[in-house]
Length: 454
Image (tube, rainbow, N blue to C red; front, top):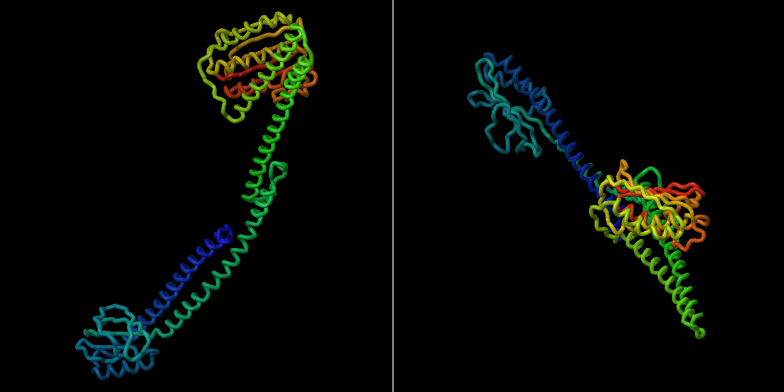
């Protein structure tokens, strides 16, 4: 598995790039040194040509060829590398023979070439010039032995070939050590992540500051925080649901067992069956609420949106609760803005939302109190309000009223609710792109405002 690790891949890539860079730089340096050395050689050749020109100008103005040959021979003996100078006159007679070439070629004026000669095993740098002096044309060929330059370039190339593997080897080892040190926090994070399970979701990954690993650890820790919150929420939801279901089931079983212990008259049987029916209905309602919340959590709840006249819908819901309000001696006031216009939503879901708010208001409003239902058009959409004169909600409980199974001791005392109604109402509002806001003063009642975007 070591061949599949990131640190080895990084090291190989680093070494390969370094090798390519060194080869490129080394080749460029070798070519630059060679070019510079040949340029210096060409300058020396130009100086030799200039020296021959000076001799020819001084001595070739009327002297015999023998005298000119003597002067040129004297100049050759006084010039380093003079044996590599050849001079011919326009008739082809060699005034200076120079070294015999291994190959013959037509050399144009100003031509530079590198050749091997019969006289020496080394390479020569040659330059040919045609000089017109005192009405005569001379062909001058000068050369320089490249033995020293070849030795220097060979040594330079050898040093590169020796140094490159050494440098790459050191870089490979150093790169592997650096990558291992740099990725050590990754191993630490991986080890810590393997230890985290559902039993210890409160544990967090180590955070190494100042680099990408810090952002990685912080992102994973944020995800673990959300996961822990949701797991705890599921556990609490499951425990609360089990507790809520246990009560009606226990009542049903107890009532049935007591009824079956002895013969009873029809009135007692009907009473027992009535109690069982009541608990069964409560359990059915609770189960439906739990199933709806489960579909909301799993994003499987789908609404059928259509144009809805919210005032008409609110009027229908209020008319259905008038009888209940009358029985509880609660005054029900309706203030509907019939000019508010339609909204898009799911009729059944919005009807359930309104019923939950009205039922919640009637639950906690004493006899003689009042409930006001109103609709209005706000800046962000349509607002549906339910205001009651009930006992209100304590400020400490107010932030939690939309939590599932939450029932405050004071505001929920004496109620047989499950604590799911307001949570379902909030979910319905949110799935319509809206929200529910609540304001309350203990002892003076509370007000729920539902904002649905138009």
